[in-house]
Length: 149
Length: 407
Figure 1 (cartoon, rainbow over the protein chains, first blue to last red):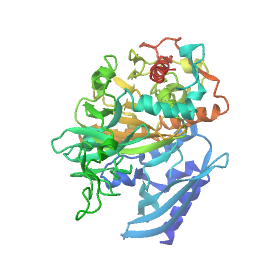
Figure 2: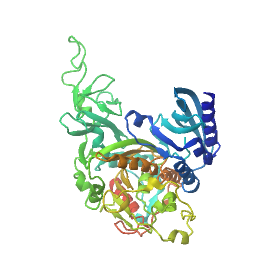
Figure 3: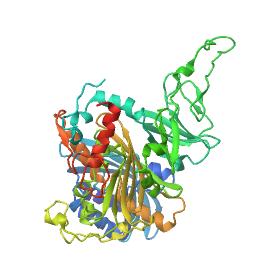
Figure 4: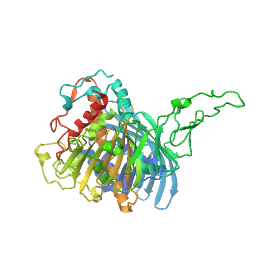
């Protein structure tokens, strides 16, 4: 449990400190990252807000954020809590955790940008995400979602 | 009446008060959203079953869209005749009738008042007078039509049929995409910090696409040097722009030293996301179509979506995205559409900037209501053409808007 919470914390700090280049390395080589909404999940609809399969696609997202996409300077603060192990196997563990993300713009304007839960499958040997599904409570996103959740 | 005057230059200027003035905003609700226009309501696929419904908005008006037991489509204002409460508070579902929770007044799928609770009182006491006419405050009912699986409504008895409203320039471009029954893949909302018209003129602005959305140009998905064009309806209200799937080997952007020009070595490690199947057989890779006042249909490679523009005040807009495929898509096509969902929406590689750019205009013009946009790319006319280095469709939007607003 301690190791899982530490993984979540390292992940959160990397994003909050703008170390986006480290972000793909929290995933296995073929790791999956998906942002969804609770509404679509409840309706059984597959639409992702962001969907990456494997580190190459995760790195593409970072490259695009760094070199192609235009967005106002902004920072996140992740608060991750209530981690629970759902299923513990020999090699993998599936777990859930709650998150809040507060977004702060350069002019100081802060807002509660997103809340929800992480549904993770973690490879124990290397302590990496094989799959991280970010299920946002709200269907609504303010202006744009650039930095990953 | 609005006491405003348009700049003398006419079609090539749009004064900034159009995005700021509260009286203009209120007048738009009446003259445009509740006037002689057709507004997008939902996909037929969202109310496929008898007695199903969704709730949505036409301008600021909350609306219930239904399919009755016989399969007919209806839409009515989501406001109880009694005290004005919402009749239906769920986003979607199935119901035999609609009952306002406040005092249990009930409505059928057409929005007709069926029953007033305790109308005759109990045991001869209380109740309404025999000649009371609560129906005089009944929720408004829309004319509803659907086309290729898209449902539209209007409060106007005089606006022409939906087909005639869309017109011969744009209708074939709509039909080009919506070729089979649709299947909803999911939805979400993007909140834009700007007036609704800033989003619509962004959508119609073919000039900005490859300059703001750098992802396009870096990966050579869309450069203005590729084959494409723009269609504008006669009244200027609706538009459609498209780009063909031709690999661009030109260097016009590099020669002009533009920010969006590629640095040379930039490419995707995993380009699977960009792989397109030419499903309509005409080699069009991107088509963006808009219908006045607030509907957008996009085909971006194999990503298909309806975008509904919902004004939420003079400087706030909600963009309701519904992404879809076709009911008979195989697993590979569904996977392709879901991978390409990365291109669009609030986190879309090629659409995330729109919310930021239009918000920048709202903030930039804060102190200058009487200054104006310069909209002179492609001259001062409104019409179709084969160049996208033009603002013809933007001028069309304002031509239509001014017609409705009497300005």
